[in-house]
Image 1 (cartoon, rainbow, N blue to C red):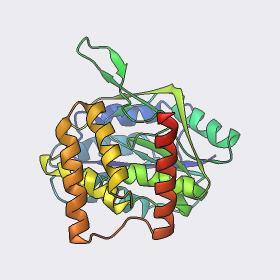
Image 2: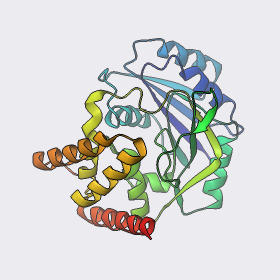
Image 3: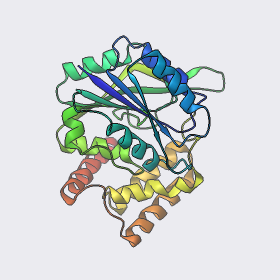
Image 4: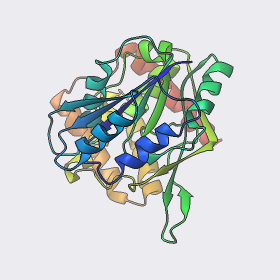
Length: 283
């Protein structure tokens, strides 16, 4: 199966070379890798140029955007610009962060997943980060059937069905909900241990604290599911303010009448699925 990779990169000179080297070490190579140099002011572009000279699979795209790292919109805008450079002759499209080290067999295993499970639409591994003892430790605060936004692989039919990625906070939840709406499954492989070089959330702008609640509104969760999901998130993160911020973001978005990310029918499916998951965890 042929796969393409798109890597949004904003000021990633400390990590990008490790990520691109891990791609070169893959037992099954991608056909194309577009690295989107998203308004970087450091040595990111020079690193991309070096790897372009090493292998013809790499392609650089320079683009301008805000210097603020707002979760969701910035990275997906860069991804979408990279996607526009590619043709449709792929079986798998991959959105990859620029601060990861993949195991050498990562994409070989991803291809096996899609080949062996035709109903799978999204696949990926698990994030590992260094703890205080300098040891790599699992950091996956979400449900185990959730693929982190840092390394999402989509089958072409699934990616087409969900209409690509939403440019908003919560895009990596919306895609999985929409995939399930279109009868695709999510597959996570515990053997695929991805090293994350930058601790989660360290690059986020403080202005982003309301975006999660706004995203829940735009995904048509409703106030009750938003409150339950926010309480769960606050407990997992041990940040009680997250609950308040999420609800405030939700109510602010509702008052402003912000546009939804999904249509009404999809929203009904999302709420039904969310309630089903909540009930299963309570029983």
